[in-house]
Image (cartoon, rainbow, N blue to C red; front, side):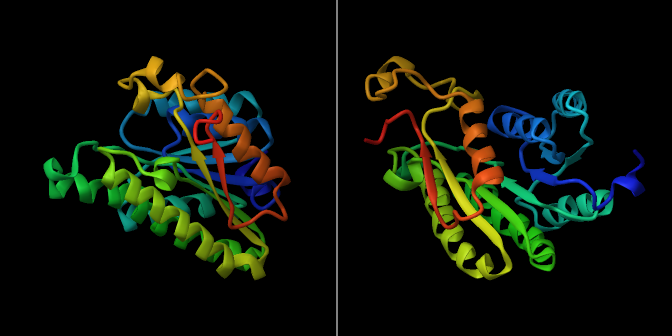
Length: 248
């Protein structure tokens, strides 16, 4: 099917930070569910190409865009290129995030600002651009990736926890703004998920506090995303913790 014929006839999703970890799992799950998927990536073009092939495997169309969502121009470009390709956006998954962990008294201005710019401002820039599209469509679903660190805090992560706590307030406020246009806005708070970001953590000590006795997988998070996207029509402004019972 040509792009012209396909434009407007399929469901379209956008995932930030979609080339690895949780983002990649979300991209693949959405493609399997029948979505054409645009995703951003930071620098690894080989990984992005592999994700494109995974999307094509399910008969859907990929669009990979090298972009930093913490840059307002690049965030807008991500949304603009998606609209140019398909003419609509049904789902936005704000997943891109970084950590720069250290104690507050040792934290540099740069490490504070980079985490806030990527994890919080990046969601603002991307959601603002996508919300304008969804409001005109009078439909859409936005899922923001927060963290249990944003709910309960974590020593050595004042920057990360602040950014993720900010996302929770952002999610609830935006849900109230967009509800009348049939756009849902929710957040998912992963616990300890087996990704590059958690490889350096003391797993055995963590598992002592996880009732399910294992780290989560990126696919565990993708399943929660898919639930909100496909079955969450009457769910908005919520934070869903996917943490194996860690925070009980």
